[in-house]
Image 1 (cartoon, rainbow, N blue to C red):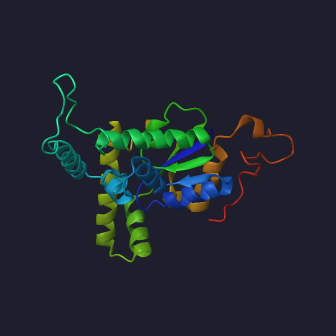
Image 2 (image 1 turned 90 degrees about the vertical axis):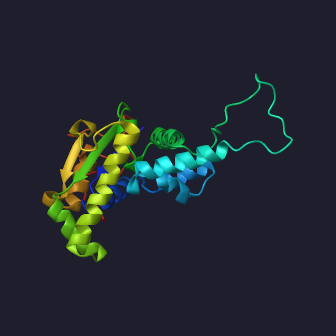
Image 3 (image 1 turned 60 degrees about the vertical axis):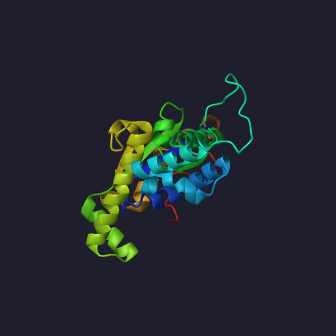
Length: 245
C-alpha cells in the first residue's frame, strides 16, 4: 500500500497539485471518480449520489433524500398480497435504498479498496479519516490565504471577486459540513494531516516536489541515499524532479 490523500481549500490549486503528483509518480488520481464508483456499486445514477457528495454537501438536502426514500419504502403491499404471519413480517424500511448511512458505507468501502490496491492519490471525501491508521499513507492539506484564492478563482473562472468569494465560501462550508456530518471531525484540524502546504508562498511546482519528497514508497522498490543515485519512487521514477504540470 502506498497512498496519498489530499484535502484542499477551494482556489488553493490543490486539484492541480494532486493530479501533478499522481502524474509524476505514475499513480492513479481519484477525485470525482469516487462518486461514479459509489453510484456504480449502488446501481444508481451519479447525479443522485451527488446529493451526498462533499462538493455541494447539504445536511438538509441529504435528509430530504433520506426521507423520500424511507417514505417510498413504506408503501403498502399490492392489494391481495399477504405480508405473512406476525413472525414473518419484515421491517418496512427497504435497506437497499440509498440512505446517508449507505453512502458513507460505500464511500469508505471504495476508499479502502483503492488504498489496498495502492499507488493512488485520493482527493477529499474524508480519505484522511478513513485511512488515518493505515500504513504508508501520506495525508496532505493544501491551503492559501483567502485573498489569494479569491483572485485566482476570479481570474480562472471569469468571475467578479465578490462572486468568487461567495463561491469559495460556499464550497468550503460544504466540505466542512461533509466532514463534520459523516466523520465528526473538524476539516481544518492539523492533527488529520502529515503535511500542510500554503500555495501562495510555494506555488504549484514546489508544492508537488515537496509532496513527492514525502511520498510513501514501497521498501523493496527504494534505493537508499548515499549510493550516488537519485532516490527513486515506487515505479522506479526519480523523485525530486520538476513535474510537467
